[in-house]
Image (tube, rainbow, N blue to C red; front, side, top):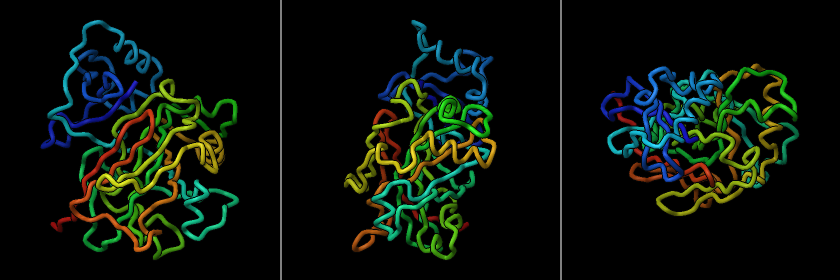
Length: 295
């Protein structure tokens, strides 16, 4: 399945609903509430219930469903308010090298907050206090059940699905501290979407997926999840060794080489730009860049 969270109207972002795309083209969808009123009305509640997930999956096999075009809706972050957003840094050797870092002995972990998230096709903000907004193409996955101290044998069973993340980073603020969190949590800088793809539609542990970022159509990053220093299973083991993971928690797996700050001259996102992140089998996350307006 390809599940997503959306606003029924672009002008009303108080109410969200859960949709299911008809296929990988992501042009038609059904609203779960229109088909089965007993299903949960949030994606977090849906993925936390194996029974409801099975019911949602069974709906797609029905002969006549009210499929409709995506016109007229607005995408929300896949999980609008996750309990935890755990991010990784330096998970590709080439990205570590371009930043002047040796291969780490242990991943760099940091966290994001929900107010930093934005959905597919929503505006990513260049903050009023900086002009150094950078892009980072990343694979994300979402936890589907409560888990702690996972092992190689059971780690993948904890994943509800995979998505795409753009870990928008304010580089000058990131370097104000030895910790990266402050530069990674500006409002509306973390693109998340367009959908959650269940594991049955992808290779095991999301291996072998090409990942790209494109700025105004120009390829900036081009790599593959086979180049992870720590794969999905290892990441789950490391994080769950420390904390209990719960349904709806999001893990962001790091970015490959080609980010803007490491280029000569540096390339930062400017108002009027469009940044796209594409991952094989999942889709394209696209966000226009706009300048933050002070209220």
